[in-house]
Every structure is written in structure tokens, then in C-alpha cells.
Image (cartoon, rainbow, N blue to C red):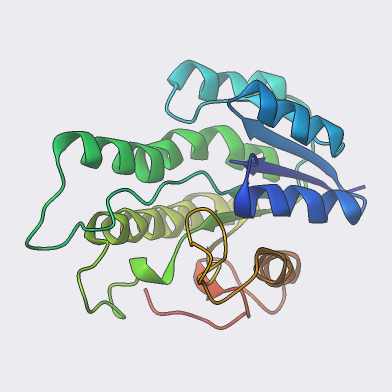
Length: 225
């Protein structure tokens, strides 16, 4: 039975990954922060891990909690959007910058050396949930500047992780889930969460068609960095 670890499994895209993988018969580990989220995940059959990605000791503690596990897929989903009115002419406050960059970038930096080695024996996949808004080649309007910048940095981390861990057999990809109807995406977004996650799962599980070190959307289309 394959095993998935979902970092940021409490709601939205992460919760849907947990639901779909459980329905497919996978063993699923999911991180959460609140007791209510723990109970929701437990009732789905998820093995829960109380981890705040901004807490260095809790991130480090994941290593011993998962020691000896053979992980087939790690989904790095934890993230925040931050101020929607962040633009070139409206730079973020210190607090806004710290929250978004620590959650979307620093947390990945700290998590990579903890979770990537868990994938080696299974020759598994590390998937970083990014966004097309982080594509430098595709950039235009500066709306959501802080979020865009954080996702561009997350994409760089995906490329660096590919260089470090692919020689060990770990496949590393960045994924754009689409504009998804979640709390973050809002009710007017283009894609329902089940369709987005099903598409990303296809990319994650199809090693031959979607190679390591690349950036794909949920339909499997390659995106420019």
C-alpha cells in the first residue's frame, strides 16, 4: 500500500488530497495545527501529525515521528496568500512580509531536509504546491506581489531540491493547482477542488510523463519558470 505525507492537510487542497488518497487506499499522514482539524483528519482515516511549519522544533520532530516509513509522495501544501492589495506601489508591511515568506518559503527550506530523505527508498515524488503566479516568464500585473514573489522563491527551491535529491532517486516537481474554489481562491474561482487535486495526483503518480525538475499545472501542461 503506497503512503503519502501531506504537509498542510487541514483544509482546501490539502484536505482534498487526504480524502482522495484515502479513497484510493493509500496510507496518509497529514499535518494539522488545531484539535478540530486533527479530529476531522482522524475521522477520514488519516494518521495525524501536529506540526506548525513555522515551529522549528515541530518540523524537526517530524523526522523521528516518521522514522522507518517508506513514503511514496510528499505534498508540500502549507501556504498563505497574504495581502491581496500587495503591489509594486503598495509594498507589504514587515508583519505581512514575515508571515508570507516564512510560511511559503522558509518553511519549505526547513522541511526539505526532513521529508526528502523519506522518499529515497520508494523513489518517490516530492510535489511543491506552487502557483502560476510565481512564474517569472509569465508575470505581468503586480497584483498579489508578495504572494507571487513567495511562489517564485518556492519554485527555485523545487529546482534546487531536484538538483540535490534527484540523483538519490527522488522526483521533485512544482505544481500549479489552477485557480481553485477554496477559502483562498474564493467562490468565483475557475476550478473545483476535487478536479484540481485529481489532476495533480495524475501528474504526481505518472513518473514517466512528467519528469523531475519541472513545473506543471493540474492538467499536466508544462509551465515556464
